[in-house]
Image (cartoon, rainbow, N blue to C red; front, side, top):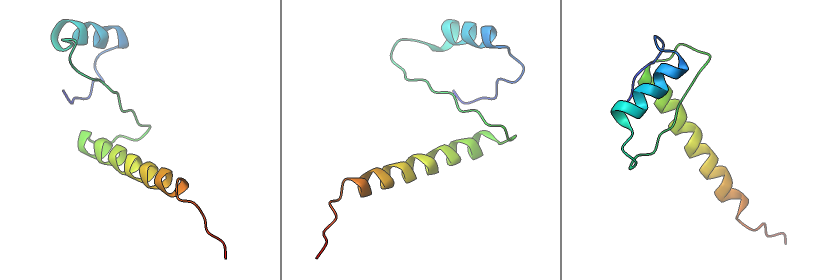
Length: 67
């Protein structure tokens, strides 16, 4: 479920999740921003960040060879 929950407080969000969405088989994450991004913009920003972190981690695992 992707939605902006700006009209709900934290307790209402938790209640919504418990009653309607959580089945025990899902993984949840919450993206937040200080900017007013669309859902698509938030998700793309998150994906870019994740890709960059994976590249950096893979570079760290490459041994340096000095000749």
